[in-house]
Length: 193
Image (cartoon, rainbow, N blue to C red):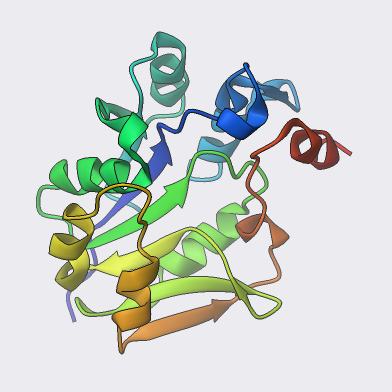
């Protein structure tokens, strides 16, 4: 089996409605932004490319650049997460796998990302981190799923694609960060303790 060529695609174009007027991705956490902390987990990841899908925002673009991510603007971000996944897939070149993660997961462990990248999945496979019997993020998709991912629209994510896949590898992890995404100010406060 050839060495996988993985693109990390981080979804960071959401409007943060549940967070209030402020942008959760730019909220402060550990003297950094939520997005900056989330991207930092991928710093040493064994991936060929690092892509972040953002809305048009200079601050978000600067955070991505500082973390070594290529920022791609999703001009249809208001239409849902599916459009961000599709934008990420459209940016791929010759990658064999896509590791799709979220920009509001600041407690994700770099070790979890490394384990997912080393999961022996073929083109038809999907690898999902599982914490205490609950599936988390990010998720690794083989190339056989790229067309389906590229066709996503609205709020639909990859859940249906995973449900229909016969080759889902569950990677048991002790990293609670695979379950923790920041949607509200209360969640951010709890994360800081």
